[in-house]
Length: 449
Image (cartoon, rainbow, N blue to C red; front, side, top):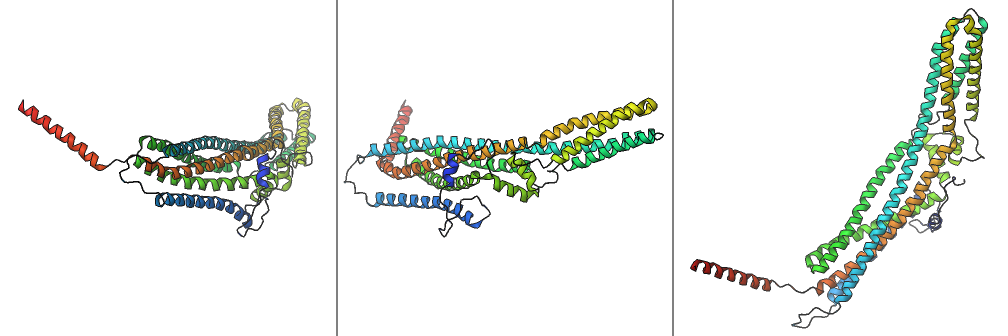
């Protein structure tokens, strides 16, 4: 099935879709989107596991580096008061890592914004589609009720007034049959009535998930920003307590970065598989959830000349019946009203009802055409497969930059710790003693005065 007008799979979709996939036994898995298949689920979980492997290797590397730094450092000569050389290199390493982290924060904010825009476009398209389907149901119900009311009141009254003329009664009964035919045909046009799947509910679920995703990423971005700021503050003030706090925070954010990287990579891979050929999956899922016929779903999801309008016959019969009612009412107005003045009111009321029904019918024809719903379908795909996928890739880059920067900071902080000047407790006690002695002498001098 072809892609809908206005949507074409992007280069990122093609690139990610071509990546090889494997299950837990490292057997190849087809790249067709099949989230219900166990092998496909394992392929996505394996992508998450690769991020976990990266986290494990990072922690091992950091641990080995710290052990080597602490255990293999040459002893300082006795009486050495100056810090060992290399302070400038350590400082610049930390600054370079923090600059990379800040760049990653900017990339993360952009990626988060793009993802939110894509999800917002998806939700808006679902809401517009829900409005269209609701309007169709409302118009059909309104027209059927209006025609039923006309049959019960005006046409019944008209038959009673024209009892003396059998041919006029037959014309009124013909209008009644045509109105009942229109009502019967219209009831089959409300195809979404009673369907358990609601685009509004899907949009609400998407917005609910997006809200928590957005909060999680904003918190992660703020945590990394705090790590950058307090690390710079700790280096500037040469505070070992700040270094300890920042080491703990850096480890936490490093774990979160690798975890988010795995989720982003798996989501991007799965989304690329879906976006490479979305029609077949959405058609099968919608038919399974709604129970609608394939002719209706093909008409709205594909919307091309190869698929005919499944409602065309009902629309044609309804339009002909409305035209017949109109001609019959004109004949009754011409023949019956001069002889039966009391028939004028129901005839005029029927003509007004018919005019309103015809206006609603033309509006219904426009809503039932595939253009509107198919446009919303294309907009939803563009939001999901273009903006959201691009945002996920930027978030993936943010997580990668963050992980590298935090690993570098964690390796540089112990060296910075060793370069901080010592602050002995003895010197502090001596200074406190001198201050106490001076205060005591000042008090004695005040007493002597």
